[in-house]
Image: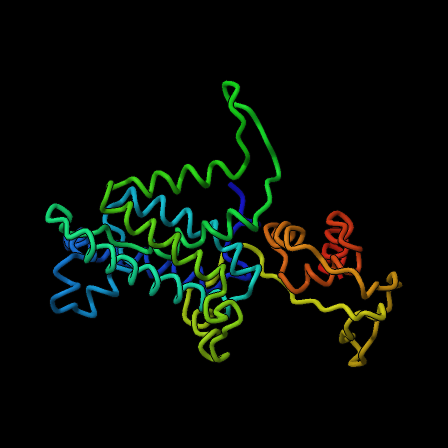
Length: 296
C-alpha cells in the first residue's frame, strides 16, 4: 500500500487530523469512554451535546478500529497532495457533515431499538475518500493469489472492508453514509469542488501540527521559457541559471489519471500538471522533469 513518500510532506491537514484522532482516542480510551460517543437514535430527537458530536468525529471506539482507520487516513493523504490543503479541508468538512446527516436520517428511518449507538470515529472522511480512490487512483500492478487476480489497490479495499464490518451494523451504517457523502462531493453538489476556505484558515493545520517526518521538500518553480529561478551567490550577487527546455504545446491537456499517478509519487498537483504539459502527457518524461527540477 503506497501513498507516495513516507511522512506527511505536502499534507499538513491530514497530519493534524491524524494527530487529533489519535489524541482523542487515547484520551477517552484511558477514561473508558471511547465506546460511548457514537451517534444514537436518542441524540436525533433529544439534546445532542457538542462535546459528544466532536468526539464522535475524531475518537475511534476501539484499538483495532484506530489502527485500520489511521492507516487509511495516512494513505489517503495523497488526495490532499492532489487538490491542495485548502480544497482538502473543504472535502473533510463536507464529507463529515454530509455523513452525519445521512447517519441521522438512517437512525430516524430504521428506528432499531437494538441499534443503541453507531460506532464513532472519522468514518465519514475515510469512506468518502474511497470514492476518489476508486475513480482517480490508477492501478499500477496486478498479481494473482490462488488463481484470483488482485491489484495493488486491493489491500486498501481489504483494510476498508475490515473497518466497515468491525462492529457490524454500528460501523456499516457510518461507512455507507461516508460513501454517499463522497459521491455527492464527486457529483459537485452546489459546486462544492470549487469551494475554498480563506487562506488563513487553510494554513491553520500546518501552523499548529507537529512537524512531518522525512526530508522537507524544497519549493521549486520553473519558468516556461526555460529560465530557472534566481538564486543568491556567496558574493552577495544574484546568479540566474538557464536551462534549455522544449517548447510547451498549448493544446495538450494532461489526463487526470496521469496527474494522479505523479501525485501518488509525492509530487505537487500543480507541478505535476505543468510537467505533463511539457512532456506531452508522457508520465515517464514528466517524472524526469520533476526530479530534475528538485535537484536544482
